[in-house]
Length: 601
Image 1 (tube, one colour):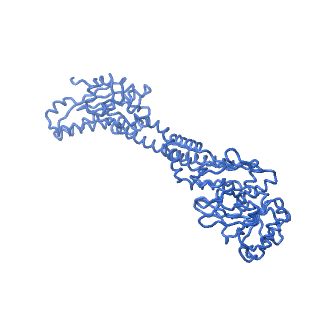
Image 2: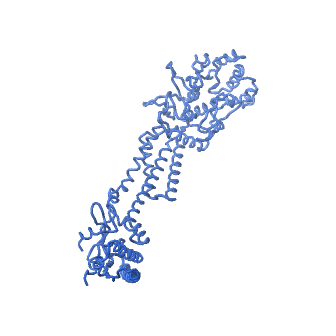
Image 3: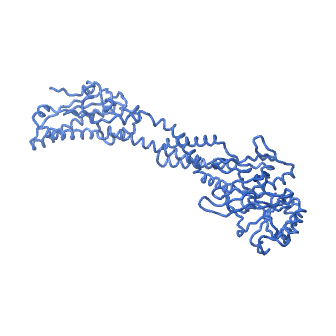
């Protein structure tokens, strides 16, 4: 057989080569490498835009709430001022005489320090003179001031007598954009350039001084206190994006809500209902917790992203900071640490790669969904464990990268397979049975390479059938009648080939070329024999079909014909053949030539 003739003749198995060029790019192999960096870059861009900041804070809060509750810090006692205390006193602000009595009673037990978290920039009679005497006689009493004004509160001066003695701490708090407090101030520097310690830092330093611990500054500007290194907050630490990092801020490692501290009401202290050594050698903070005074703030313990819970009193927040500093310095309790931006980027890239690998492996379906759930759960658990060790590693960006990469690669492969299936079905779907078409699809990777069906040698059976005397009939019939008559014949013969699991390779004029045993290679002699038997059975059925057609044509006054059939089994070459514009799946070889019946008998 001449290849040139085969290429020029009309074929029913043609497909534009543009369908194959896409596969020739082999992009499916490269996509697994391209998706992780692309997704990572997109996630980093979204994160830098601040879109993920709120979700990152929510993950931080959830990690905080899931931590096991720590025991009370025995070094701190909080004296609370609640609604019953205000009713007993009969007014707010509390008179100076009541505060003087309260501090005097506490001081009698010789605490290390007393933090008075109640503003006293102006006298509140009666008893102002008595309070001034307390300022002079209680050397470990620390007053408070508000150094920085915000949208709702102006600066508030401290008691002048305590300010002169350097016994004042700032109670300024750092609120995030969602209104929660996740950072604490060790110190800040107002406009007069004089550094002011926060109340929590002031009290903690007084306690640590009793243990011979004083602060030192490391080479990179961080503060070292005993075993604790307090790393200064940067505006992009953890889940933050371009946050205000003014003053010396640290991430608050809360010990817990109010229940994690030993508390006693002001009334109980004034009426002598406290243990005689409750305040001895401890830090005592005095502050309001009454809802009517509104000195309450949202913290990580205050509910979820969509549901607000109880707020924490400011005095308890200061107690948490005090406990954090002392526990780190004396007990080595971890401070929150964060990764560098390079490590975070690499971390996101890793999980994007894991998502790509899982998506590639499980594709779409329940397997893919389960792998994403298990992978996301593993990541969350891993970061929760790291959180317990003092590491805040962002959860949201890697989760997004992991999920997006998995879905992207799975969706891409699904789309790719859809195109492959469409290509294979276009090549074979109308010329083979559904069963053979499905076999071809399942073996597509073995059949298709470099954008085309590769040539391969195999043993197959070729059947040729044409009509005897067709040229004479064609000369005597009108063109439209001839085509209608011939199409009836071709449709009947093609259906019979498909019924016998053969492939209609070509319809050439009046000739039908069918092949049995392609494109899936036969691996045993039994399979080859079955193909040959199928071809013979097909030829017999074609003859029977032609008898029925002749009977019908005779009644309709159309020409009747006889059929010539040639069958050969042997080695053939199959694959894509054609020009740059069109390509056929065809069968070549001596067996094809042998199976072709002679044009003249």
